[in-house]
Structures are given as C-alpha cells and as structure tokens.
Image (cartoon, rainbow, N blue to C red; front, side, top):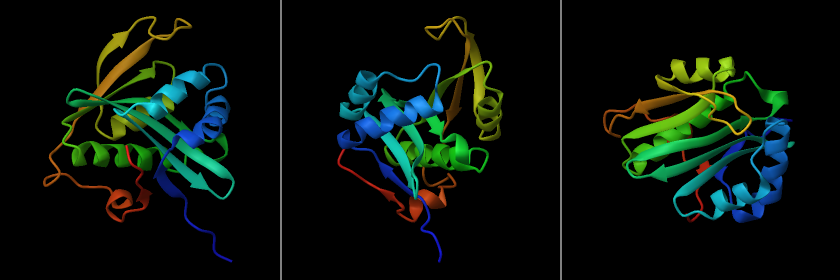
Length: 171
C-alpha cells in the first residue's frame, strides 16, 4: 500500500491548538505562546503554511508581509522527520508565495547557535547582514538574514508550488 505524499496547505484559525502543540514539540524551551499564534493566524498580513502527514503535522512556517518584504517568523519541522529536505521545501514554497504576491525580499532571524538552520539558509542564498545581540527574550543572539527575490519570470519556481499542491485558503 502506497502512502499519500504530505500536503502543504495554508493553516486556518481552527488549526490553533494543533499549531500550539506543534510549537511546543519543535521549540520545547522557547515556543510561541498560544495567543501569539492566534494573532498570526488572524492577521490579514500573515500566512501560516503547514505540512500534514499521516501522523499529523510534520512542518509549519509562519510568514508576515511587511511593506515590500516578507519576514519568516518561524520554521518548524517535527523532530522525527528532520534532515529530509522538508525545511528546504517550506522555504522554497515561501519564496514562491512572495514572488506571486510581488514581494522583492525575504527576511528572517535565526539563533547564532542554530547551525543546521544557518547552513540551510546560506545554501538557499540568504546572506547574513548583522548580529542582533540579545535578540531573543532569553538573551540569545540572532543573525539577521535576507535574500533578494528574482521576479517570477526569471525565478526558478518550486515544483511544490506550481503543481498546486498547496491548498489555498482565503487570506
């Protein structure tokens, strides 16, 4: 019996509890609070992508659109499926959404201690443009990273996005 491929979709407010549990699973020491996730889900300038697998959520990404830039607020992959390219797929889907909406840049902050994530972002063409000392509420430093996005015509658009495997919601 073949299993269904994971589905990437836009989260809905009804996903709040599931997303909060997922945050705790992925970011045990410092997850987003439930009310913060609710604010993101209800914000017309934000999109949360989730990947559903047979055993529930396998990945989630929160995006906030500010001016002409998109800011990645969070990228989480379930511990049981890490190091399988899921975060890379999520990042490419986010970039495709940004291009589709006409955004020219994408930004994020990442802990200076999160070496696997830093490596991923650099591999995808993100550049470090500064250190944010004491950025996190617990005092940890972060790198500010960003990438300029090519217009849709010149960009290589992710097959994940172009095959309409992301199930859109009204946002």
